[in-house]
Length: 259
Image (cartoon, rainbow, N blue to C red; front, top):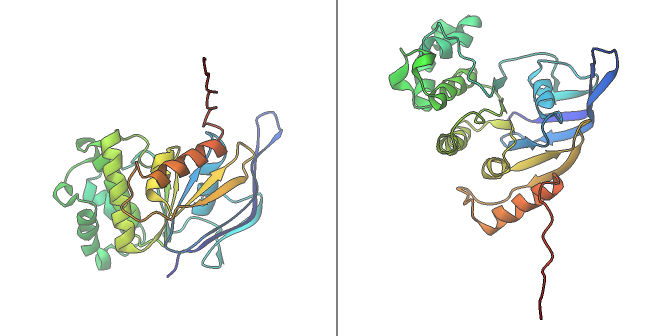
């Protein structure tokens, strides 16, 4: 199986408008096993998306390196598909042409065009190929974005809060869809999320990140069998553990006894 990511002593900095240096990631080390589902969770602005963009090759680290199957990542590549929080579909193209766009850009559409219909079926949009993005619901548009990323046969699918804008019920349905697609395609998935329950429902490992400059605060192995029950005692225990690590658990009030 392929799709192993290694993050080796990565530091990322940004120059501020006043000329000062902001450190977003501070010597981050991480191994993501091939075929696993890993979630990044942490306070807003801590560097989760920065790390995801580095893995995608959209930016380069100030120091350290990131590899995919031992090869250094030094730019974007179809082997690393990326799905954003918003669908980012081309509004002037049909759903079919949106999904086919990557194949056409790589000039392999003639040989691979049958896969467009296959991937539309995979995400349940086979009856909406001729529709346009504005004609789809938010969940359906995000399915189209997934198909567009998946058709490149990525080793790793990177998900930047892809379900954050959806309503609760659509979000839960899409979580199940992600697990189904991962099972069918046997690919590595790495997701940024602010939702602890979502991370627990989907992930094999949860990387808990500290406030900026981000370090890895904890890595939690989630060993519950799937499908997972959100009211399972182990689910609730891990949820409490993550919230305590993030300092969002609160303090349990002391009991008062009156005699």
